[in-house]
Image 1 (cartoon, rainbow, N blue to C red):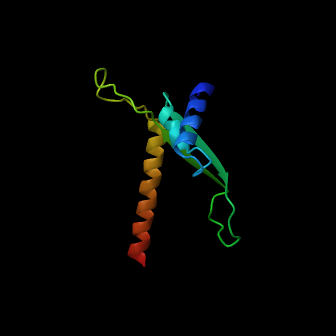
Image 2: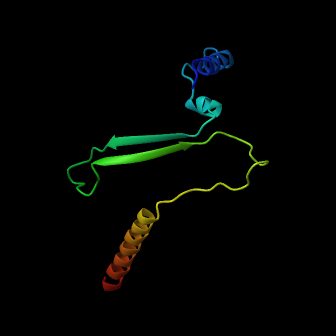
Image 3: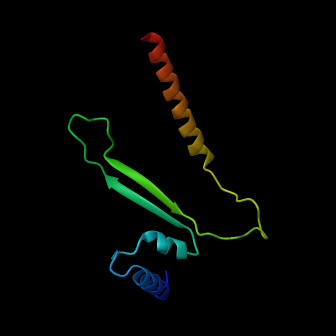
Length: 107
């Protein structure tokens, strides 16, 4: 974001919240964005020794889309999907579900 936009957001927040709150909420910055924002958080997991199935690294995604009015230009948004990866995910989920049913039938 341009520094002047950040300064305006900070000043407006200070004027509205005199003495109440010191830090500017990030939602105010996101509202002023003109382009989408993708946040990728890579987190090193810490687990108890007993929990051996827990992953070592966790990944969290955050998406923030600016408000826009494009009704005069388009009514649909096209997304691209990696079909190979999508099929692999679906197959893995189907295998997991089938394994759960087999375990339930035997027990």
